[in-house]
Image (cartoon, rainbow, N blue to C red; front, side):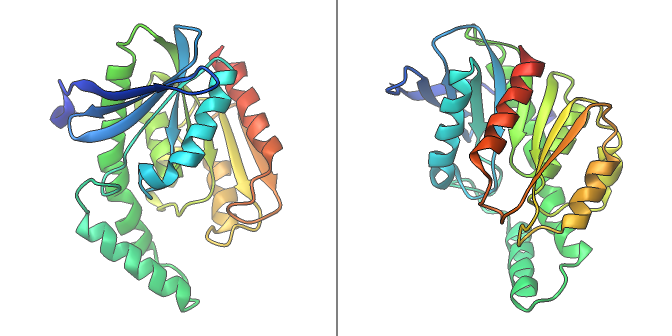
Length: 250
């Protein structure tokens, strides 16, 4: 976190959504982000993870999650991942993504080398940025503890659960490739977990997801598996995740 120490948060815009949620865009140094707060304050905070597709593309899904969480009394925040959106590209990650697509289109197994090159540098860069964002967010009077982490690249969630003591519970989506090195980190996770698995996820190795769940060191961990592909998550699965956060953050 040394490179981000002292980074200041600046709000760049704000709007009140029709359900009363206050949405504010911010920058953390050069990193864009969005904060949503309910009318009740101070509120517990949920960090909204997302795939590295860019905040603009992900916005409709993120704001829907934020509004759902606000109805339950939670503030939510997210930041742009390294190499995504308008942030500078990461050439090695771009090459790994091209290699991944080539392997999948050819029906070949995705090698550990490709997965490592795609995921591990992203985790190394993103986690300190999330921690710096958490520093800034928790200094705001409208944000209180405790803190949860929800969704996104599961390896980022694993690393945050290990290194960030301010995160009390995590809802993880078993829908992204997992480097083998992350299994050792998973054994160090002790916070309550709610893991969502789409049984027929076309881009996810189901057995790896099951093995990862088995590796988690948490005494309380729940695996919520549903039939269907990557984007076929049923509404009630989201409701169950919301109940998980209400149980652990309130």
